[in-house]
Image: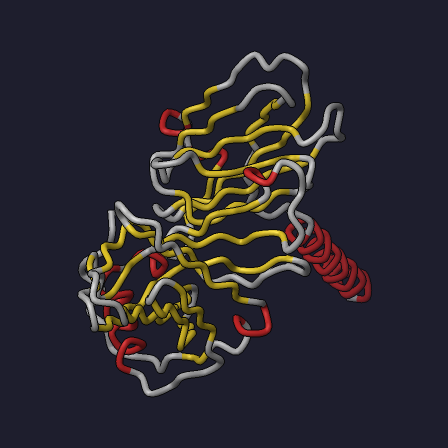
Length: 291
């Protein structure tokens, strides 16, 4: 009987030991990861990355990489080296289809490839983000709520050429930020809007200023207007992916007049961004989404 009890006790300890080993092996399993896409860039040539959807966010691992969206093409990112022989770094790009794209960047005097199409790549280099980022019904509902909200917050405004351009409300809900803008035309000449663009810029410009900014692409514009009649005013809400601004940078909001020279820019600092008001949770039909 004692022999049987001894065997049972030994077996029990071996069982516990086995559980402990299995638990340790499970906890040591690496998390799911994505393989970054290797990319080489140079100082004297531009490398173009073509994405299947519009670019909504770019993060550079180093200032040695200059990045900007191609003019007139929201899905093309242009890269160039700020100096030669820089150490290896990385680049992260988020697109409107909900993908995070990862790249490892190295310098070479003569890149073998200057144009890269991500349309033909598989999902090894990208992961899907929350579908709420691009839900049309959700964005429209919250943008409308922000449009009519009585909250004003910290105002940023500028007046020039008889045009008053102002930011009078910043709101946030989940992964999106809603910027409420008012355009007032105090002149008798109508103002035709050509472009409304958003950039994160360095406060102190470098020599190669064209590549020292990152453009933020709007997800949705509520009450989008193309013309401000004389002696009239319009308010709209622009939904963009949430962000904050690093030190020594600012958000530039540019308003361009079509066939005219009345261009206006707002400079928004991070202390204004972080005071965004939280929009209340609303019941929303999620049937329709952006494609």
